[in-house]
Length: 256
Image (tube, rainbow, N blue to C red):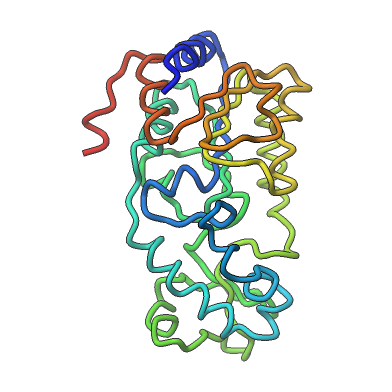
C-alpha cells in the first residue's frame, strides 16, 4: 500500500467541506459479489446484449433470469465489507455528503450509509414494463429460484429494478449525483474503472467545478492523470486506512 498517497488523500479529506464518493464493482467484490468488466468478470463469459438488455429481456425473460439467478443469490447472501463501513463512518463524521454508486446490491445502506444514489438501480422491487405495477422482489424469489420467470397480473414479465443495457438511468437520481459532484471539494472514486457512460463523466464534471480527485482502484482509469491522489490497491484495505487517518476514528468494531 502506498502510505504516502494515503496520507496525502487523508489531508485532502481533513481540509474538505464536502466529500462525495463514486463507487463501482470493486467495492463489492470483497463481499463475494463478482464484477462484470474485470479480467474474470461476467462479461468475459456471456454477451451482455444477449442477456442484460431491456430489448432482449422483453423478448426472452427466461434467458435473463437463467443468467441473473446465480448472481441474485450471491448478492442476497453478501454482507458489507470494510470499504462500505469506512464510507458509512465518513458520512457519520459529516464529511461525506453522498455516495453515488453503480452497484445495485444495497450494501452501502446495510453498512449504515444514508445518502446513496443508486444510479444502476436496486433489487428491492421489481416492476412491470407494461403497466408499471411494482412488487417487492422478495415475494418473487420462490418463482425465480424455481427457474420460472415471474409475470405481472397483466401477463408481462416482471423486471428487477436494475438498469439494463439500452435503459436510461433514473433521471432524478442522476441530477442529484451531478449536483453533488458540482458542489464537492473532494471526490473519492473507489472500485471503478470509469468505463460506463454517463457515470464515468461525473469526476470530470466535478473537476470543472473545482473538486479534487482521490482514485482508489486496482487498475488504471482514464482520470488517473488528473487525480490528486491515486491509490492502486483493494478498496477494502485502502478505504479504512484512509478514513482512520482522516478522522482519527478506528473502524475495527464496525467490521466485526
